[in-house]
Length: 375
Image 1: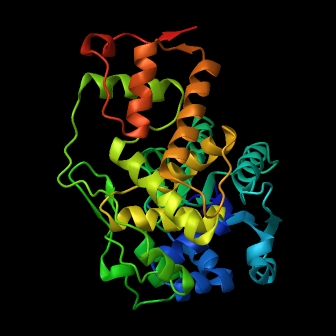
Image 2: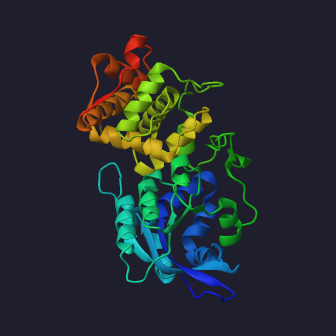
Image 3: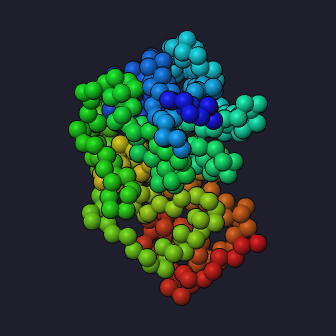
């Protein structure tokens, strides 16, 4: 901690920027102007982060930051034109090119490794700031908390409840845009701000078909409507209890049947129309789901895509179907249960398959309450 008793105290901070995530999110949730301002003028917003009050000291003095570590992680194949802007602003820019045919980069692994390395920094770092809405960083936040470090996050769009709960503070989107970027007149897409329901869960606004400029919009408009679920209310059936136990054991968030159906159908529609690109496909799938009243998070779509890839399902333009994607996902989840030592009987496997694929077939109720057998 900086000197006490001064008019303004400082904490030593490390800043990690998931560029692709923030830039694409700004494009999706706001517009190209906001995204370009973030990308081309990093000195404006990181200076604001330094000066923004991080808290109040025991002496009652405002606490600001000194960013000792500034790291930016970006895909050079897509965003190389912004690399120089970050270099001139004193950032270490780490190139994270796609490592697979599906466009997956290693940004999350780079951030985690560098953050954990920073824990052993000769100069003690008081705070770790992560600019990303990727819920994959949730375990990192919890590890940093165990080391008694402050954590702050910024997401340019909806963030999962677990991710938000794992940090000490979250930078306001409105303040970041108006104060850090200096853009005072901007509306979220569709002119609707994000709001929270009574449980505190983020509700994304309805997304209209014109939120993405260019050819993608015209193609998306051709996609068929999904089966929109009206007034869905949470229930606690024996099957849901079983599914919740299974996904908790394999450490993958369980989605509702409606969410799985929306993701599978939207993935097939998007890939058949536009081909597959990890970032663009993820965004467009979220858009299609939201248009049809189903809210899914970026991490939800990523999980389905990664699971299909690991099961051997490769996305191919023109031949995708919701059924084939659902089968690839089901196959991986079943294999993951075996790898985790989770033994499911035939009826439990049938329940899991039914939940994922949307089949109405359900096994007898007395088998649904069976305890999972874990080796």
